[in-house]
Length: 388
Image (cartoon, rainbow, N blue to C red; front, side):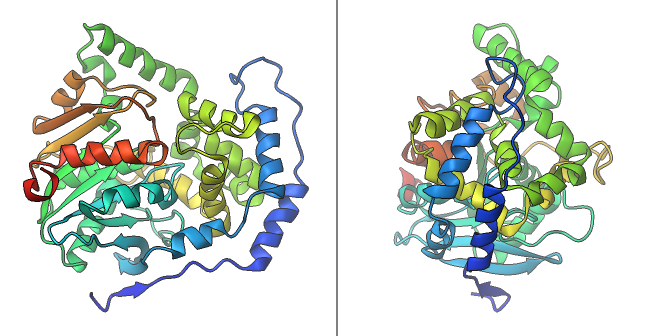
């Protein structure tokens, strides 16, 4: 391993956990929403149940323990220290795989997929710049393509000359960019969110019931479900003050995401009913990681970099179509369920399309076994001796 790569251990101080407890206890609550649904945002009952569990039952040492159970490292790439988990398979024929999380996720959302995946893959799980234990960029310009090039450099430093990449949410954008850039050694990509569909939904096929339902879901997202997206893409610094000052504000901002995921989270805290692997402890592991690292604002800025109208890359020429084979998996609880026809239109090199039976936006987190099976199927042609 290169001398540029340094071992890393998470260290959470007692003072940090005590401060979290003080701030939870001092929460100032708004009055209850004046509607019977979540159309005004995260419901008061959900946040109060979450805060109560966080303050009285949740083990604040879980994040440290879970991450330190895996090999972690840091390396400086393009001026930013990048944190990553690196788990090598015992299978000598395993295929190297770099997986990228999104927002409001982190490497936490991938931890339960490590076991199901490491029989077939050497896993590299980086934290996006400005997220979790990766450093914050100190300059503008860290768009999706720059992150994609950093990931290619990371794989080169690790000695992987033949590898695949996967991502969802923001990670789907990074993985999509990797496929379009085509760095040496990349032989295939897989995503579970069709990012190109947001560019021009009207240009997509719209004749079948499945296509019409997907278009309707995108319209709903763009008209009533993307408030977080607009704020972070245009004014990330403004929301950043609340995200760094109040743990309950951070939690509310992070769980006010897509409808399916929200209801799973609400059930977990209000009714104590987990949905798949999305338990109360797992949800709070992710939120607590953001809080302890103080990365709510810097993670928000990544949306300004990638999607904002004033971002450095705004107006740039689009990257060419991917030159490597592309796999795609559609999960039923996603913001919109992508039809095969859309994936084929977005990716001329599509060689795998899977329609999963369960799972949603956080597919690796919610259904790790099913997610792992999708990746093995998607990359089977790249490594038939391992995945065949």
